[in-house]
Image (cartoon, rainbow, N blue to C red):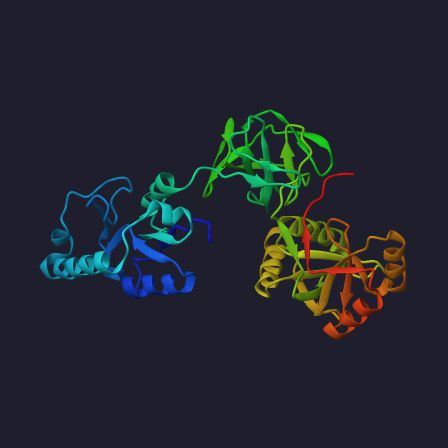
Amino acid sequence: MRDIPIVTFINKMDRETREPFELLDEIEKTLALDVTPLTWPIGTGRDFKGTYDLRNGTIRKFGAEEGEASPESVEALVGAEGAAHFNEEMELARGACKPFDLDAFREGHMTPVFFGSALRNFGVLDLIEGMAAYAPTPRAQECDVRLVKADEPKMTGFVFKIQANMDPNHRDRIAFLRVVSGKLSRGMKAKLVRTAKPITLSAPQFFFAQDRAIADEAYAGDVVGIPNHGTLRIGDTLTEGEDLVFRGVPSFAPEHLRRIKLQDAMKAKKLREALQQMAEEGVVQLFLPADGGGPIVGVVGALQLDVLQDRLKAEYGLPIEYEQSRFNICRWISSDTEVELDRFMESHRSSIARDVDHAAVYLAESQYSLRYEEERWEKIKFDTVKDYQKKAE
């Protein structure tokens, strides 16, 4: 049973695009969801005049203030012929699409659809108001020891995203924390479970696009940004003292491995620091070979390599090139027997590396060589997925 509510926003209606029904049909087939439009475009492309709210019959005129409802009629906006076409679409939309069902939406079987132009800040308010009206209350979250309910009095939360250099002038670093339970207050002390050390939440922030404001208080379901200098990582859990770790923030084995070729060898230290930050942010995965070789970066999709290259040049002044690594496969390794793991790592030193969390990985040249080692070393686990964090011992 699907249980993730999905809200759909069809963007760029002020540009030439496909017909609304064609777009709705693609969403329905691709996501296997019932679609129900809550707003409808009045014209498209250069003829886009606004949206009609199917719930209350109000019109938002394109180009007017976002919060204003237009007193004009559809005919006044698009003429008699355009209004006739619009009315035909309305009748067809009401007949072909199921009416909005709140339970079906919250169960993840139906998606409400809004139209607009985000660049022009049009239709965004409809989307936000719809999410506020229909989104479910914060749900309980599984952790390693129990189920944490949203209405519990003590604060808990987990870091799901790191963003570096949001303000390039200050090299800032923001950890985005999803509050799971309780109340987060500005200035409070919280326990970072991974290290078992307290940190002070002196300046938590709310974000909306590029705007930010100090968050004096935040509650279950809220997302706050916490400025820090590398203390927090993806998957970290913060609590008011309890030892627990939230699950569901895994790291997947990369499908592409590349060595970094730095054009200016004098900037090697700066490159290492930049790669460390990018890895902690989740842009790429960083592997440092045990034999002292140059750093290897891993990505799930090849596009991430372009992102890394552009960001290193733009944000750190580090133009780089990639070299093909002799390795093509990466697996995290572990064993119930520490002695056996040490034996494997010592006998495969040239193929062993450490990731950003210092976890051991085995680098293989091919699927054949990986299967060969798996058969020879039955007590070694070769994992394709790794939890980001574990509690401090």
